[in-house]
Image (cartoon, rainbow, N blue to C red; front, side):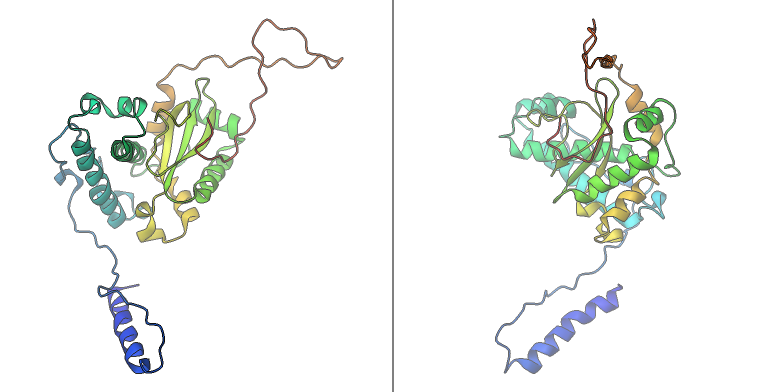
Length: 292
């Protein structure tokens, strides 16, 4: 819808009210300012700087339009300059004079008191957005390779099934939040969500594991292009995923040996084993942020 069409609405509404004012019982207010599409201003990410403080704005390594036609330039500029930047500035203010002022982002999350609501919201938002922007890139997408692809095929059945579950979980998220691909210490994968700006590392959430990939499910991340088509947005996300970065995250920690599974004996009783036993790994199903 273009600007000219949008500007007509207040005029038409005004005419209807004036023609019917003798018979109308209830009047619906019409916004004085018409809603118009957000236009890209043509600036560069490198031109933005955070206010002086403990944290700096993540340097976006590509231009706003670089992800087109998948993610449009206007959304990327809006997302980066009107959401991430204000979160960084707000975080720099709220940590002043607190124990968090001398900590990096992840230690803040791991040592967070939930009573510090402003720190929780802004630190989570900055960490989550940084992680999101690091995980996307121009000329990316496709499928991962090597150890990560093997883990996806093992834990989800196939890459296509993983994409389906990740998208479905994103669509089912109530309100605003984030969808995450997580790995446990054994390298086994699962999908979770966190509400609002909560991050998986936050003490008190009861989430364990290492985050590998996330998707911003706040409306500001997709609404200019996709409107209410959340599934299309989630599916399109996989055209810009920076799998090199995700593979790097998966390979950055040593995997513990998974507990051995002991098959039951023919008589129906378990054969004694010298190693710890555990149930077989099942394909993860979409879950909410309350799961471990």
